[in-house]
Length: 193
Ligand SMILES: C[S@@+](CC[C@H](N)C(=O)[O-])C[C@H]1O[C@@H](n2cnc3c(N)ncnc32)[C@H](O)[C@@H]1O
Image (tube, helix red, strand yellow):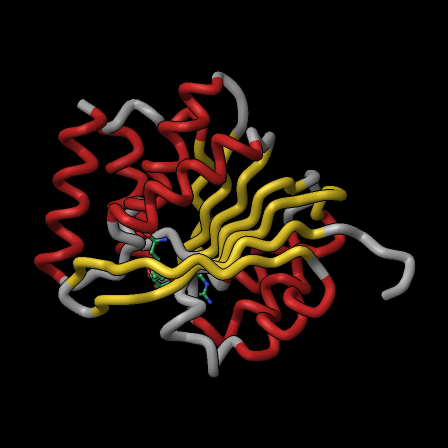
């Protein structure tokens, strides 16, 4: 059933031009989750659950870890919840509706994996909202750092200056983008900052 739901969600995103990672970047994201084996992933920007399904599948295979995913569009969040349920993964995910920058402030648990995939100008405010809950170290993954570089310049300057950060470029087969990048940063608390 999982494969069928994933295929249907991908097809719907392509048809309705709902933004999603796409398979090229999603495979990379899944490998990041597999490597980190996080206890708690927080995702900013659920859309209808495409990236969430990829991450949840890894958590299910590992047998540990949960996802909190945040979406400002209530209609998209509702569709994502249905998709998580249909894939049999709803018990691993807490889907929240609202502005990520605000909802992040209410998370009181340690967060060891953060995915930023919401509006580009909100990456740095979101990072700052959750920083006090990030574990030391924590994996921070930011999507769209190719096409959104100018708008998220404050975020990119921050993580590239302070943390081990790598930019990964992808050729992408989506109607609205053909090339883009993901930034993976290993957050570490430092006494110098
Ligand atoms: C690129 S899409 C997310 C794609 C999704 N991660 C995936 O790969 O399937 C960005 C989403 O962020 C949502 N969004 C935009 N601004 C937001 C905010 N301030 N807080 C939460 N979600 C936001 C949009 O409604 C949109 O659905």
